[in-house]
Length: 109
Image (cartoon, rainbow, N blue to C red; front, top):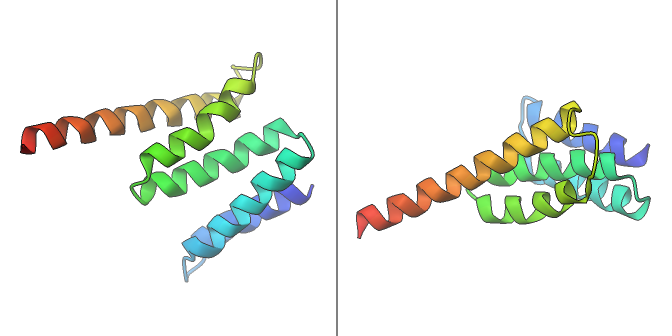
């Protein structure tokens, strides 16, 4: 429960009139830590996705993928659930963004 409360608080920090990404990230990281401590893999996945989205938006695609991929990789079933579908799509988008960024770097040289 504590993990989800922190996760929701992070989401609220992002949509508040005074968007606070620092506060949101702190809430997401707390949600992630609590979920990991409780071995609540679904909550851990949700927190990891929120952190990964935030980092993606900050241009930290590598860090986002490095955080999310092992959490997603832990699952062996349930791939038709919304959370796992979203995680897979996010990982795919992060990989695509990395390829596009790498292509851009080479075309600039």
